Image (cartoon, rainbow, N blue to C red; front, side, top):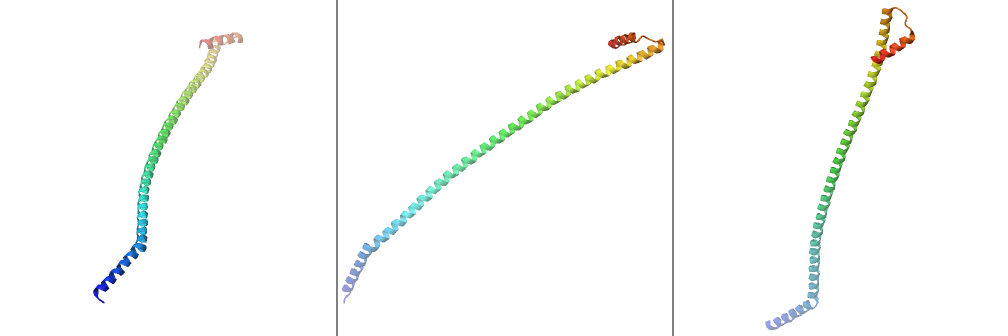
Length: 156
């Protein structure tokens, strides 16, 4: 055999191998590569969608946190306002109670002053009668005595 026949045989075997590979193996490889490319593209698309969903979730979280902070601020402001109203109401109630106690004390003082005046009048009248009895050393008519005491008490 010559190199030409061997070379021609190798070319025929190689051509048969290429034809067989192109007919039966190459389409399966291309399908597998296309499927792998599709899976990679789907994975990249899913990753991009995941990133966009993550960004959207971050925005929603930031908005919720912002809303929660705003609501908390409103609640704190309402609580501070309520506390100020309670303090003001307590102050007003204290002032009303003070005025009531002062008025009560004034009326008590007035009543005690009046009572002290009445007692003093009675004592002065008793002393005046005792002094008058000693000076006069005589018996005075009880009715005249009562009238005289009434006039004397009214004058005092």
